[in-house]
Amino acid sequence: MKPIRIALIGAGYIAKEHARALNQCAEARIVTVFDAAQDRAAEFANTHKVAVAESFEQAIERADMAWLCSPPLLHEEQIGKALDAGRAVFCEKPLAVSADAAWRIQKAVEKSGKFVAVGHSNRYYPAYQKAQEIFAAGTLGNFVSVWSQRVGYYPRRMFPPWRLDPAQSGGMTVEVGVHEIDWLSWIGGEVESVFAQQACAVINPPDFDDSLSAIVRYKSGAFGRLDLSWACGVDIARRGITGDKGALMVDMFLTSVELCPLDQPTQKIETPSPVDVKTKENLGFLWQAQDVFKHLREGKPPPVGVKEGAMAVILARAMQASARANREVKLAEFAP
Image (tube, rainbow, N blue to C red):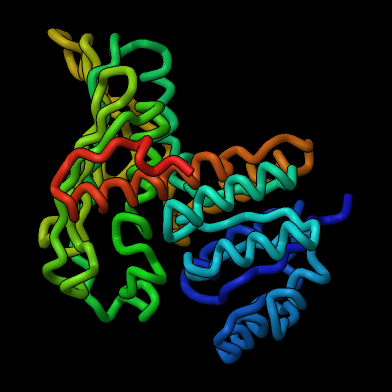
């Protein structure tokens, strides 16, 4: 069976993480790389022994699939070009920088019938999968709430210029918050409304949202809680679910789930670490790529597609709008 030929779009940090995973997949092979920074693309090509393309169009000529690791502002245009060329697509999160762009991408993909997967890699971490499995089995009883805390401090020197520009990245809530927002959607289901507060105090004031807290109201009547920050000296990364018979929490290092039934002892359920002990590789990228290729080969819809990717962006934008207006925002306000 011939390997799926991959055009890697982007040669920055996240592209290198994806390349490491792709190189471990026997069913795929990177054949070209394109990056607007030609020196970066040349360095990547030399390391991975692939061809350098001078344009996006040239990159996908020899490929079966475009693997997008480019800045979010470029995703809509690049997905459109790939669809027009008849290529399958993998798009790193976030799917887009605006709710309107997310809706347009979703409609274009659905109209085309092409395979477009979105990189919500956290769905592949065994601890989160175990938590979702426990919840879906009804172990916690009736659903009450789901929550996520992802706070820490990231100095400005760690960011490429595009990431600090909300017009290009969508800001913190869109660019990285979609991971946590996708968790809230995965567990909670359809959203009725959001209320949020944010700060633009440290990373790139006055417009860059470096801290945000939100309450999500689901159509079921349950609710979700979200705390995000790139400007907090305390480092916390935890997720949990509460029901009327108990609760659970995923530990910060993603190696266990604490199951806490009401009036019963806590159970610690060990799960495989998503970090390779020897290489320190994030195995989530590998597991994600393997599943994407499995679905593509079998002619099945992507495991995480544009519907999930678009919803995460739309919810992120609704939260930002709520914070700016200091009011509850109905999700219906963001309908196309």
